[in-house]
Image 1 (spheres, rainbow, N blue to C red):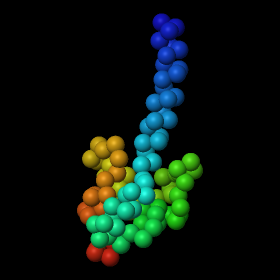
Image 2 (image 1 turned 135 degrees about the vertical axis):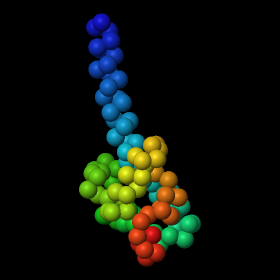
Image 3 (image 1 turned 60 degrees about the vertical axis):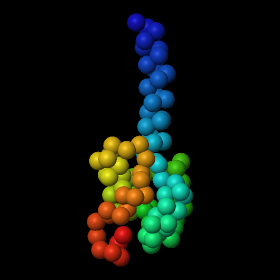
Length: 97
């Protein structure tokens, strides 16, 4: 019984860290993919509030409306990572894509 508790004390924090790391899945590759699709992505502010977001200090408030929509879409799709193809379905006019 004690052995299970010790294992849980080691595994639970590691799992939490992995989950938090997975939540922050934006990469420069996503920006490149958005540009390849012809979307008007010029920098990280396409989905983030700041030009150069840091993974170490990430907070959900660091996302703009598009970024928050992508996170909701990730949850809806039950995906592990954000897919740049989802940006085509972002609601709004053509200028907001």
